[in-house]
Structures are given as C-alpha cells and as structure tokens.
Image (cartoon, rainbow, N blue to C red):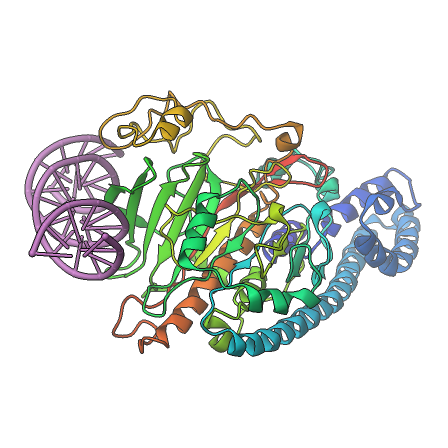
Length: 527
DNA sequence: CGGATTTGACCGGCGC
DNA sequence: GCGCCGGTCAAATCCG
C-alpha cells in the first residue's frame, strides 16, 4: 500500500522516481525464494544515468538484503521491517541523487536562459523594427544537433513491465518502455552554429509579402514554430498545430462554441470557442483544420483567463516545459523577452527526450525543422507546431477519450466534420475527396486519412504519450501565452486582465499525446 | 428543460 | 465609399 502510494506520488511528481519500489518488490520476491544475491540484470539494462544512481545505492542495499535474507530464516517479520526500512533508505538515496541532477539541470537552464536573454536583449535593440521568427521544434533526439541545454533522461520505467498489472498502468503495457528515449533539449539554432544566430537574426527582416510567400509555400516540415508577429495592438495569440483526431484538443478548459466560419483559402471551417469555465472569461480559441494536412488541427488561443485554471491545466503551468516557452520568448522581436524574465517553471527531468528547437533564421535553418505559418492560419503570435509531416518525428495529439492509439490514422476521424463547403479551389477538390455540402464540413465516413506514412512514419506515433509530456507542452503554451499577454499589454498600455480584455492569455492544456519512443514504438498514455 | 451547438445575419477593420 | 473578410451575435435547433 505504502509503496503503491509512493509510486503514484512519484509518478505525479514528473516521474522522478524510477519504480524502485517495484524493483524492490521484485527483489524481495526473489529473496523469498532463497535467492540472496542481487539481481543486477535489470540495472544493466537501465540507462546510464539510472545506473549511476543504482550503483550509488546498491552496495548498501545488497548488503542489507543479504542480511535480511539471513534474518528471514529466523524472523521473517523482522526481515520485512528491515526491508521496508532500507527500501525507503534506498529511495531516499535515489532521490538525493536525482535532486542533485535536477539542481544542476536547473542551474544550467537558468544560466542559458539569462545568457540568451541578455544576447537577445542586445539584438533587439539593434533590430527593433524587424520581425524575426523564432522556431521551436519537437523532433526526435536522433535528429538533434548542437543542443544548448540537455536534460538527461532520468526516468527509467523498464520495471513497469515486471510490476503486476494494475489498472493504473495498463496503458503502458503496450510498449517497451525501457527503450523510451526522449529528452528535453533547448537550443537556439536548428543546425547552424550558435555564433551565427545573432547575425542571422539581425539580418532577417521578412516583409509581409515575404511572410505570405513563405506561408504559402508552407512545407510539410516538422517542428514547433514560434511565430512572433503580433503587432503591439493585437491580441496575444498562441497557435498550436498538432495532429488531433478529435474536433478539438482537450486542453483542460471548458469551451463553448459560438460560431463557425469558412475562412478564405481554407475550406475547412473555423470554429470559434469561448471559455466557459468562468462567466465572463475572455479567453477564446479558434480551431481549424490545416488545409495541407487535414489531420492537423490548428488551435489558436487568445485572451487571458479570469479564473483559476482547472486542476489539470494548473499542473501544467508549473512544469519544466515552461522553460521551453521561456526559451521561445527570447526572441528579440518579441517584447516578451523584455518583460517576461520571470519564467515560472520547475525544471524537472523528463522521462522522455523532447527537443525544443529554437531557430532564429528560418532561411538558414535546417528546413526539416521549420514550419511556415499557414496564411490561412490567421493566428498572430506564437505557433506551436507539434506535427510532423516529414515523417521523422511526430507528435500526435488525441483526445483522452480517443480509443485509437496507433501511428496510423483511423479510417474515420472523429474530428472530421460532417460536411464540407463547396470546393473553393481545384486544389482542394483534389486534396479532399469526400462529400461536400454547404457549410463546410467533411463527411466523417468519407474521410480516409491521407496519411500513408512510410515505415518511419509508422514510428511516428508521437513522442509524448506520456502525460508528463502532455503537461510539458501544455505548460509551454501556457507560459507563452502568459508572457505574450504581459508583453503585448505594454505597448498598448493595457494591463494584464485589466481594462482591455484583449490582453494576453494563459491557456490550460491537458492534451494526450501519443509518443514515439526512440525505438519507434508508439506509446500512449491516458490521463 | 437547460445547456450546447448550429447557422444566418450583422458589424467593424482593412484594402482598393 | 465600397466590397471583402474575419469575427461575433443571437435565434433556432439539437441533445442529454
């Protein structure tokens, strides 16, 4: 009981724990069978970081357990007590080790943060009127290069497989978690040296037309893209591009649909939602399918919640992913970087490797990490692109209630509308071969999912099914929006949540993300 | 029956 | 000034 409870706590606590409880239980069982020696096989299979921790605590544990085995012959009751005691001690030792690592990570992150912030502050002074773009991408760690900050994989969940199946962890048994290899990385350039960042940023002065052109040529490229283009008097907005089978992403808040429109250039209807968690909450969001890939859902959040966020959403706001958000906000063109230095994030190691890619110059960046903003996506502000059309990395958001968890899109999407408006362009007609009607919705049954991914794409079932990753990404968005709101309120003289309801926003997010482990296995977690 | 959704109408900003 | 377009309103409708 106690161990199970501890396990739950640790799991909630960003999975800092490595299921040592289960391991202990396993060892105890073996001892009960007369096996006094330690079973080191598990340790050998664990990741290096975990191994270090294990080694740090093993000597004591092994000795103790040997003693316990002897004692067991005479007094099994006392042995159990000793096991309990030393099990806790071992956990504490592990926790201490982890805390040390966490401190180092946090220190390094903060150091990088302020370092970059200073750099960008300088750049911004020289480039105030320009409109550079920052790019943040999620990609597989195998494709990562030149990271400026890496959070090593701390969690090893291998032993989950050996734990007795319980309802709480049934959702994990479909994968070999031992091979889950995800990491959180922050870097400031896609593929260029850091030294070039500033010059690139300074030289990047996209015009509106160029932006449109770039957006038109929107390539199917993976990555999170932060598009900082909000005029000072615009609402703070954060757009999220993610593969989502449902009509909307479950972001932890309650939304009421108040309108739907067919935006020019995109036959997919744009739905307008209003936050109904609290009366009068100004937060709104727009949801629209991406024309290029109907499986991609573009959600644009706007406004600031005037109420406490739901539990799920609140938890997200305190996760380390805010670091990524803060990192993104370092864009020199973004006034956020001037004000939003108080990144409220808790840097905690993740049980996965997530790459937040921060590029300053889309033109010179690795194209595979760039996603242009869809012109039809009227979102102004930050765009968090969690899609992966290049088939090398993938993040697919699905509703928590969704029953599908494979890399392949189902024959029918629950999110697909019932009808579609008359094709506004030939390209659409060719791209969307399903029945069309007057107000723009697609026949769900007619949709067959255009994604026939390659074998790589099959691996592409999301890096982040782990709820913690969900929290991470959501927190990033929340942080972004909060900061955006703070920054945009300055130029126009509005205060956060003040007279102008159009000031920034903070959005809670509670997405379920299918994740793709390093070995290509799809992992799905439900809340 | 109350809340949520749908959907046509309306309004305001913006470009020509 | 006019038309286009994005965004919102609100009555009608749907649904549990």
